[in-house]
Image 1 (cartoon, rainbow, N blue to C red):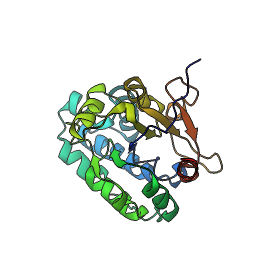
Image 2: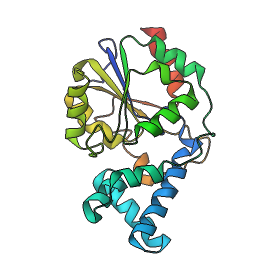
Image 3: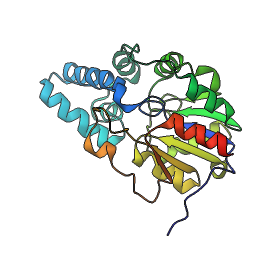
Length: 231
Protein backbone atom coordinates (compact mmCIF):
# COMPACT_ATOMS: atom_id res chain seq x y z
CA UNK A 1 0.00 0.00 0.00
CA UNK A 2 1.24 3.46 -0.89
CA UNK A 3 2.29 5.51 2.12
CA UNK A 4 0.18 8.61 2.72
CA UNK A 5 2.38 11.68 2.55
CA UNK A 6 2.49 13.93 5.60
CA UNK A 7 3.10 17.67 6.02
CA UNK A 8 6.06 17.91 8.38
CA UNK A 9 8.45 18.64 5.51
CA UNK A 10 6.20 21.12 3.66
CA UNK A 11 7.35 24.73 3.27
CA UNK A 12 5.20 25.76 0.27
CA UNK A 13 1.40 25.58 0.36
CA UNK A 14 -0.36 25.68 -3.01
CA UNK A 15 -4.11 26.24 -3.21
CA UNK A 16 -6.58 26.03 -6.03
CA UNK A 17 -9.17 28.82 -5.84
CA UNK A 18 -12.75 28.00 -6.84
CA UNK A 19 -14.56 25.38 -4.74
CA UNK A 20 -11.39 24.97 -2.69
CA UNK A 21 -10.92 28.17 -0.67
CA UNK A 22 -14.69 28.52 -0.33
CA UNK A 23 -17.29 25.74 0.11
CA UNK A 24 -18.79 23.98 -2.88
CA UNK A 25 -22.33 24.80 -1.72
CA UNK A 26 -21.77 28.54 -2.25
CA UNK A 27 -22.15 27.58 -5.93
CA UNK A 28 -20.31 30.71 -7.04
CA UNK A 29 -18.91 28.80 -9.98
CA UNK A 30 -22.46 28.17 -11.14
CA UNK A 31 -22.56 31.82 -12.25
CA UNK A 32 -19.37 31.40 -14.26
CA UNK A 33 -20.69 28.12 -15.64
CA UNK A 34 -23.84 29.85 -16.87
CA UNK A 35 -21.90 32.67 -18.52
CA UNK A 36 -19.61 30.16 -20.26
CA UNK A 37 -22.69 28.58 -21.79
CA UNK A 38 -23.98 31.99 -22.88
CA UNK A 39 -20.64 32.88 -24.46
CA UNK A 40 -20.42 29.59 -26.36
CA UNK A 41 -24.03 29.81 -27.53
CA UNK A 42 -23.57 33.36 -28.84
CA UNK A 43 -20.17 32.70 -30.40
CA UNK A 44 -21.19 29.49 -32.19
CA UNK A 45 -24.80 30.58 -32.79
CA UNK A 46 -26.22 27.40 -31.31
CA UNK A 47 -29.08 26.63 -28.93
CA UNK A 48 -28.55 26.68 -25.14
CA UNK A 49 -28.77 22.88 -25.14
CA UNK A 50 -26.10 22.54 -27.82
CA UNK A 51 -23.93 25.11 -26.09
CA UNK A 52 -24.21 23.20 -22.81
CA UNK A 53 -23.14 19.97 -24.46
CA UNK A 54 -20.16 21.63 -26.16
CA UNK A 55 -19.18 23.43 -22.96
CA UNK A 56 -19.06 20.25 -20.86
CA UNK A 57 -17.43 18.19 -23.60
CA UNK A 58 -14.60 20.73 -23.99
CA UNK A 59 -14.25 21.11 -20.22
CA UNK A 60 -13.67 17.41 -19.78
CA UNK A 61 -11.43 16.95 -22.84
CA UNK A 62 -9.34 20.14 -22.67
CA UNK A 63 -9.28 21.00 -18.96
CA UNK A 64 -11.33 24.17 -19.51
CA UNK A 65 -14.09 25.06 -21.93
CA UNK A 66 -11.98 28.06 -22.94
CA UNK A 67 -9.10 25.87 -24.08
CA UNK A 68 -11.54 23.89 -26.21
CA UNK A 69 -13.03 27.04 -27.72
CA UNK A 70 -9.55 28.37 -28.48
CA UNK A 71 -8.39 25.11 -30.03
CA UNK A 72 -11.53 24.28 -31.99
CA UNK A 73 -12.82 27.74 -32.89
CA UNK A 74 -10.02 30.29 -32.47
CA UNK A 75 -11.62 32.17 -29.58
CA UNK A 76 -9.49 34.93 -28.02
CA UNK A 77 -8.83 34.27 -24.33
CA UNK A 78 -9.20 37.92 -23.31
CA UNK A 79 -12.72 38.15 -24.72
CA UNK A 80 -13.73 34.88 -23.11
CA UNK A 81 -12.31 35.65 -19.66
CA UNK A 82 -13.71 39.16 -19.59
CA UNK A 83 -17.21 37.83 -20.23
CA UNK A 84 -17.37 34.71 -18.08
CA UNK A 85 -15.93 36.30 -14.93
CA UNK A 86 -18.48 39.13 -14.81
CA UNK A 87 -20.26 37.63 -11.82
CA UNK A 88 -21.66 38.61 -8.43
CA UNK A 89 -19.09 37.69 -5.77
CA UNK A 90 -21.36 38.74 -2.89
CA UNK A 91 -22.30 35.15 -1.89
CA UNK A 92 -18.74 34.85 -0.56
CA UNK A 93 -18.28 35.84 3.07
CA UNK A 94 -15.07 36.65 4.96
CA UNK A 95 -13.45 33.62 6.59
CA UNK A 96 -11.17 34.96 9.31
CA UNK A 97 -10.74 31.49 10.82
CA UNK A 98 -9.29 30.16 7.58
CA UNK A 99 -7.14 33.27 7.24
CA UNK A 100 -5.70 32.75 10.72
CA UNK A 101 -4.91 29.11 9.95
CA UNK A 102 -3.27 29.94 6.60
CA UNK A 103 -1.20 32.64 8.30
CA UNK A 104 0.17 30.04 10.72
CA UNK A 105 1.25 27.59 8.02
CA UNK A 106 5.06 27.59 7.90
CA UNK A 107 6.46 28.95 4.66
CA UNK A 108 5.04 30.32 1.43
CA UNK A 109 1.43 30.29 0.23
CA UNK A 110 0.52 30.46 -3.47
CA UNK A 111 -2.61 30.22 -5.62
CA UNK A 112 -2.66 27.99 -8.73
CA UNK A 113 -5.92 28.51 -10.62
CA UNK A 114 -7.43 27.97 -14.07
CA UNK A 115 -9.20 31.31 -13.60
CA UNK A 116 -7.88 34.83 -14.10
CA UNK A 117 -6.01 37.04 -11.65
CA UNK A 118 -8.92 39.49 -11.66
CA UNK A 119 -11.33 36.75 -10.61
CA UNK A 120 -8.86 35.41 -8.05
CA UNK A 121 -8.38 38.87 -6.61
CA UNK A 122 -12.13 39.40 -6.25
CA UNK A 123 -12.57 36.03 -4.54
CA UNK A 124 -9.63 36.49 -2.17
CA UNK A 125 -10.76 39.99 -1.23
CA UNK A 126 -14.29 38.80 -0.45
CA UNK A 127 -12.90 35.97 1.69
CA UNK A 128 -10.46 38.30 3.43
CA UNK A 129 -7.53 36.09 2.41
CA UNK A 130 -5.63 38.23 -0.11
CA UNK A 131 -2.91 39.31 2.32
CA UNK A 132 -1.93 35.71 3.05
CA UNK A 133 -0.84 34.77 -0.47
CA UNK A 134 2.46 35.64 -2.07
CA UNK A 135 1.27 35.29 -5.66
CA UNK A 136 -1.45 34.03 -7.98
CA UNK A 137 -0.49 31.82 -10.93
CA UNK A 138 -3.46 32.09 -13.29
CA UNK A 139 -4.46 30.85 -16.72
CA UNK A 140 -2.53 33.68 -18.41
CA UNK A 141 0.66 32.81 -16.51
CA UNK A 142 0.04 29.22 -17.61
CA UNK A 143 0.10 30.43 -21.23
CA UNK A 144 -3.58 29.44 -21.49
CA UNK A 145 -2.85 25.75 -20.80
CA UNK A 146 -5.10 24.75 -17.89
CA UNK A 147 -4.61 22.17 -15.20
CA UNK A 148 -4.30 19.19 -15.45
CA UNK A 149 -1.78 19.75 -18.29
CA UNK A 150 1.65 18.68 -16.97
CA UNK A 151 3.41 21.68 -18.52
CA UNK A 152 1.24 24.02 -16.42
CA UNK A 153 2.52 22.56 -13.17
CA UNK A 154 6.11 22.55 -14.42
CA UNK A 155 5.86 26.21 -15.41
CA UNK A 156 4.31 27.10 -12.06
CA UNK A 157 7.11 25.34 -10.19
CA UNK A 158 9.77 27.06 -12.31
CA UNK A 159 8.25 30.52 -12.17
CA UNK A 160 7.93 30.46 -8.39
CA UNK A 161 11.00 28.33 -7.56
CA UNK A 162 8.94 25.68 -5.80
CA UNK A 163 10.44 22.33 -4.81
CA UNK A 164 7.52 19.90 -5.29
CA UNK A 165 8.99 17.48 -2.75
CA UNK A 166 8.49 20.19 -0.12
CA UNK A 167 5.07 21.39 -1.27
CA UNK A 168 1.42 20.55 -0.64
CA UNK A 169 -1.43 21.01 -3.14
CA UNK A 170 -5.09 21.62 -2.20
CA UNK A 171 -7.65 21.00 -4.96
CA UNK A 172 -11.34 20.26 -5.48
CA UNK A 173 -10.79 18.15 -8.63
CA UNK A 174 -9.00 14.86 -8.12
CA UNK A 175 -7.69 14.78 -11.67
CA UNK A 176 -5.79 18.00 -10.98
CA UNK A 177 -3.83 16.20 -8.26
CA UNK A 178 -2.41 13.46 -10.49
CA UNK A 179 0.60 15.43 -11.75
CA UNK A 180 1.34 17.15 -8.41
CA UNK A 181 1.44 13.76 -6.72
CA UNK A 182 3.70 12.36 -9.42
CA UNK A 183 6.03 15.31 -8.86
CA UNK A 184 6.22 14.55 -5.15
CA UNK A 185 3.71 16.97 -3.65
CA UNK A 186 1.49 16.06 -0.71
CA UNK A 187 -2.06 16.22 -2.07
CA UNK A 188 -5.35 17.21 -0.43
CA UNK A 189 -8.75 16.81 -2.10
CA UNK A 190 -11.44 19.22 -0.89
CA UNK A 191 -14.93 17.70 -1.26
CA UNK A 192 -18.48 18.96 -0.51
CA UNK A 193 -19.61 18.52 3.09
CA UNK A 194 -22.74 16.66 2.00
CA UNK A 195 -25.16 18.89 3.89
CA UNK A 196 -26.24 21.17 1.06
CA UNK A 197 -26.84 20.88 -2.67
CA UNK A 198 -23.90 21.49 -4.94
CA UNK A 199 -23.99 22.16 -8.68
CA UNK A 200 -21.26 19.93 -10.05
CA UNK A 201 -20.84 17.28 -12.74
CA UNK A 202 -20.73 13.74 -11.35
CA UNK A 203 -17.17 13.18 -12.57
CA UNK A 204 -16.00 16.33 -10.78
CA UNK A 205 -16.85 14.70 -7.45
CA UNK A 206 -14.99 11.46 -8.12
CA UNK A 207 -11.50 10.38 -7.11
CA UNK A 208 -11.41 10.62 -3.33
CA UNK A 209 -10.11 7.04 -3.07
CA UNK A 210 -7.55 7.33 -5.85
CA UNK A 211 -3.89 6.62 -4.96
CA UNK A 212 -2.73 10.13 -5.88
CA UNK A 213 -4.98 11.66 -3.20
CA UNK A 214 -3.15 11.68 0.13
CA UNK A 215 -5.81 13.42 2.20
CA UNK A 216 -9.51 14.25 1.83
CA UNK A 217 -11.44 16.94 3.71
CA UNK A 218 -14.93 18.41 3.52
CA UNK A 219 -13.94 21.30 5.80
CA UNK A 220 -10.75 23.05 4.72
CA UNK A 221 -10.78 25.54 7.60
CA UNK A 222 -10.92 22.73 10.17
CA UNK A 223 -8.28 20.75 8.28
CA UNK A 224 -5.85 23.67 8.27
CA UNK A 225 -6.55 24.42 11.93
CA UNK A 226 -5.69 20.82 12.80
CA UNK A 227 -2.55 21.02 10.70
CA UNK A 228 -1.17 24.09 12.46
CA UNK A 229 -2.23 22.82 15.88
CA UNK A 230 -0.42 19.52 15.41
CA UNK A 231 2.68 20.92 13.71
